[in-house]
Image (cartoon, rainbow, N blue to C red; front, top):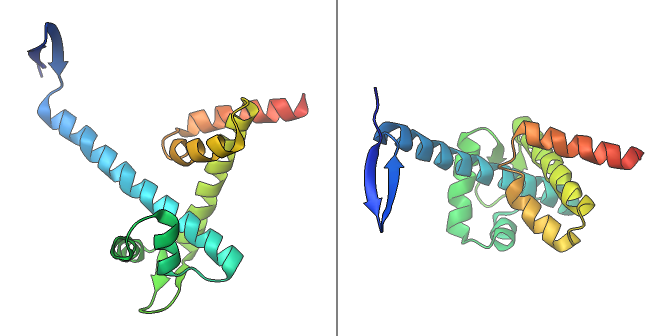
Length: 155
């Protein structure tokens, strides 16, 4: 039986989960953040290709607000994961798997944004909030948002 440790913090008592379980939780969060980054990048790459006909690392750096070195590091990981193809000094291209992930991310973003707009949130705020929420909402929550929107549209 695993027993949580108890600590006194300024007159309050708190319980810690067993260390290995807590470590697994943090590992899951780190994995989720990596997935979030992958989704953001492939979505942006798809947008750049759709609008400009190409996605360049310099454009990704400008639009994500990070250094070119950070973009290159992320692109190497995306290439290793089979989401993009790239060649030195060339544009970035999505693989079929990358394009599919981008479309899924776009759809989640659209559902969350439209839900927030339906609640009366200003468009700019809804766009910003949707960018964070889309990665963390469960499929059940997204389906509930979609059902709400469908009912509102048919009402």
